[in-house]
Length: 256
Image (tube, rainbow, N blue to C red; front, side, top):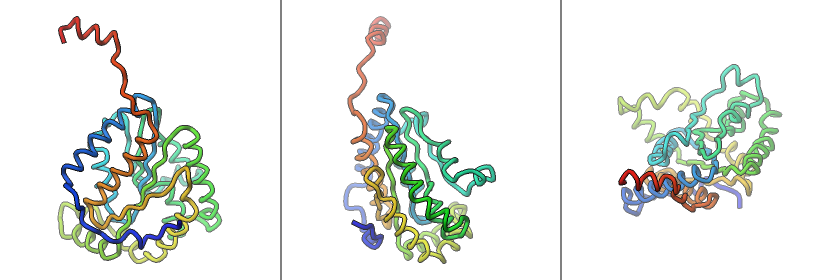
């Protein structure tokens, strides 16, 4: 079925015990990361969404229990001059996870068919060709035994405006908002059109999209963590590593 963002706008408060559920999911994700390390399984988590939709907060909770040596968060901004003269996927190839690693992209290669399309930073031929290029890129990761998880965090215009106001009112959060937020806000209809086509063309069986109703932050964080845990756990052997007999012998000899 086609993805319609209007289906993800209830903004219902989280009904469970948020702190308890957060702790359980964090512990579960810790084990899932350990399984990726032990078995050499790699994964990509791609996060897209509106400005102020809570991408950063969700990523922070998602990785709270992870060993930082085995994951990387890549915040994607405008390409550098070196990156602009190359194929748009070049800078993402350089950031793919190694064996046993999980890499998170805070904004992604979908910029080609979103901001670059809407703002005219590339030609119509370029962004129309990019759908097939992206699908092939993600299929290549899957064929290389890398799990691809794609999240889109959706909020209404009303909720976005509230969060913009909150950021302006809080002196320690003003750094999070700027002129680009309001330029993008003015073109919401153009972005909605671009999102619709993005979902239509890139919601594939090997890399499906998961839309998160992010109008309630707590509910959104739990939804993100639950979905990522389900996808990653299903893709890795969750059998723990057997104790090394030599290490066991050393421990026994040391009186441990």
